[in-house]
Image 1 (cartoon, rainbow, N blue to C red):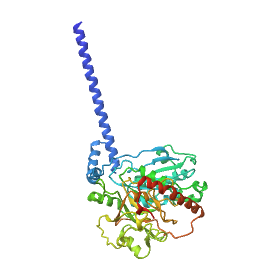
Image 2 (image 1 turned 90 degrees about the vertical axis):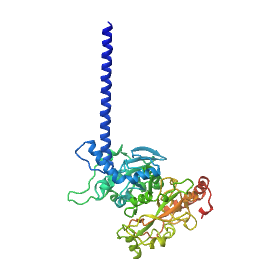
Image 3 (image 1 turned 120 degrees about the vertical axis):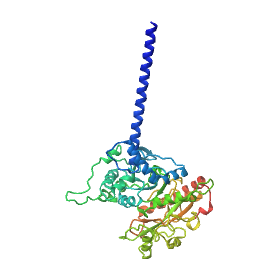
Image 4 (image 1 turned 180 degrees about the vertical axis):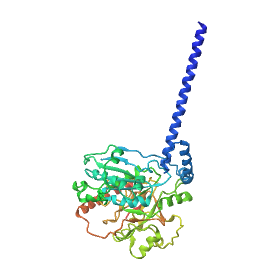
Amino acid sequence: MTSVSFANKRNFRLWSIIFFLNVAFFIVWWNFQSISHQNISKSKKFGLAESNNTDPLINLDQLVIRLQEVSFRTRELKQLLKCRNRSLRFQRIQHGEYWLLKNLVIGRKSLHIGCAETLTYTTIGDYTFFDNLRAVASRWRAPISFAIHTPGYDLNTTLDAIQYVRNCLLDSETIKDWVTFHVYFPHQHMPYYVPYNEHEVLNRPFICTFANGSQVPPPYKLISRNDSYKVRANLTFPINVGRNIARQAANTHFIFPCDIELYPSLGFVNQFLDMVASNHSVLALEPGQPKRVYPLAVFEIENGVEVPEGKDELIALYRNHLAQIFHVDLCASCHKIPAQEDWLNRPHHLRERLNVFTKSLREKRFRSWEPFYVSDNSEPLFDERVTWEGQSNKRIQIFFIHFDYFCHFQNYAMCLLGYEYHVLHPAFLVHSPGIKISNNVPSSRQIYAKEMTKFINTKIEPEYRVLFGQNAACRT
């Protein structure tokens, strides 16, 4: 009996050892497969071409080469900025009185972009603004976070527009790579159909060309603004809701909140990151330093003029009276940067790096300045109580100073918080061709604007003084 018992124990131990060896083998095999899939995913992230050879070691070698080429700056900036990488993912959430489909369609390269690897152009609009997307994407070539207001049947037109710009334009591959689309609509104006996920949107049928080979007109051109659900239902455009959605969805440390009709000079993203990486002093890294943002000069050009790529082309247009300061005929102080003439006259060399040209506060003669700037996304959010129709559409941080059809109100909260504005050179923005001229404000907008002005003076301004502090220089 003793020998049998001993044999049973020995067999039990042997089977136990075999069992644990099998478990260990399975774990090793599973981890190896996971590493293989991760390497393939990382290869796609860094734009490596896919290969029929699925050997993970080869993919890893490709990835190492790519990392050596591009990520020294990224690693340095990530350590400097202390930011965390975050992948984009689809969410169906409530945003105040709006339903939001956040990251409904995600840019292929934007999906896993590193927090310090690039910066995000955050913007807003409705389907009528889609004609600007090609120009912005082709010049920016980095993540774009696009929040689109889609009440009622406007969502249907927007989904068709997304498919069109992603598949039917010369720059569709760039749009697929970088543009992430979010849609939002009031719960009181629900669309009759809402896509369940990105797959439903991307499987939506589309046509780029007719049988005779001619281009199909884009969906955003077939339905006029006056025929949109928004106009038919007499809705206002909650522009600052969209601005906040686009900002909060960005997964990079630096963002550039901008209007989609404003096109950046070429190469700006890399120029800005190179500037920061080579000169850390441009950042406010030490405790007690004033917070800062980095505005660009803004211009507008005549209809029919090609959008300039660099400063030399811009200045040539400016000298020939084909370009001018943005909205200079409507609100001279709204987009005039500090030392504007010095910026225009400063010689520009092709090898010149982006640099801080001058700095200023939003006070006194610059109190109605409405800059577009790069930030670290830590400035106050936009005030969602104001609308485009109420002329309060620029920034949440703003305070009404000089009412004009296009000149709205200043970044009041940021002024109270003591933000500095470090103007950059030689980068700039250009509005889509066509110089705005003064005309009569529609009566409906006059009503909205009058009501909003009263609301700002009696409600927003007193609230901001309580929340952000007092500064007599920020007053008009």
